[in-house]
Image (cartoon, rainbow, N blue to C red; front, side, top):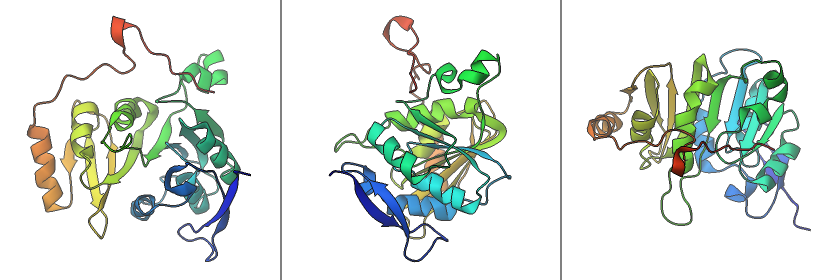
Length: 248
């Protein structure tokens, strides 16, 4: 059959790894890729017990599984646009509290029906973590990354943090400056210089970049000095009607 199984070794896990459900066509073959490994190495301890975390663009669930390994009290939600990836994640991370199948941010009433019925606000997260896709075929495509940045702040708790990892050349800092509403933005460069783990939090009219690496700091200043393009309002489409993203 087309169902496959691999062994994935997570940081701090058993040497032989753990059994992992994979399917053809999943990112990195459904396993642990080097960029996600760089992000997991850069993440600090979870901010509190029973933290609520969203693994956006979760793929087969590697990031969520690694965080649960650090703290089993974690309240984890998994989101992906690929039904096959989410099916794998459901098997690999059965502790996940909620599986969100949608492109972009979910329709909140559909994603959290009990809260909506009670007139309560949708769940807010302590962390949103993501290794987002930045390619559609060969050319770079930052649509998913921009959607994540635009919608993250209102879905985070007041002290919540957005965590993103990308290759060094992907202009995450500039996109955070243009489309985010964070008080602070930081960058952690991997040891080999190939990947950057970005973190952003707080609420402000515009972010302040605090990149520890001098080269990245200079580049961030150049990005902020660039004239911003006019941004389409979140969820807008032609004709001015909102786009409703359904969640299954």
